[in-house]
Length: 95
Figure 1 (cartoon, helix red, strand yellow):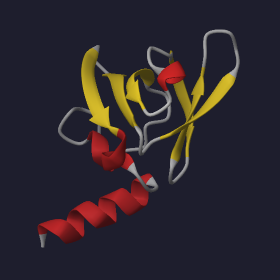
Figure 2 (tube, one colour):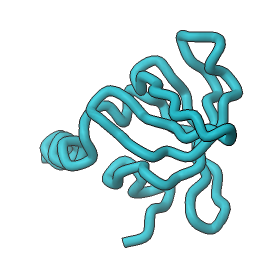
Figure 3 (cartoon, one colour):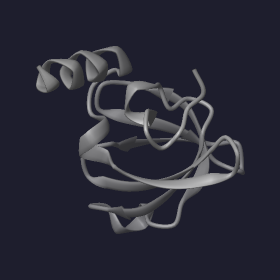
């Protein structure tokens, strides 16, 4: 299943390009790169200079580029947890 704005919360974010629009750490605002790892509470972003930056999900607002060059803004608090846990949480909230 292809990632799109309707199902992105069900998928892992690894491989997506990302820009940090807002964060509790003001030094991170405007940082761009590619998501290379995702943990329960963090995203690891590969920067253009080759450095990997670890960012807390909870405190950020992230703009991602989905396949088809579609841009989407994601609130970090919506993507807390591992992708498989997010799916379980979303399914149980709909029951």
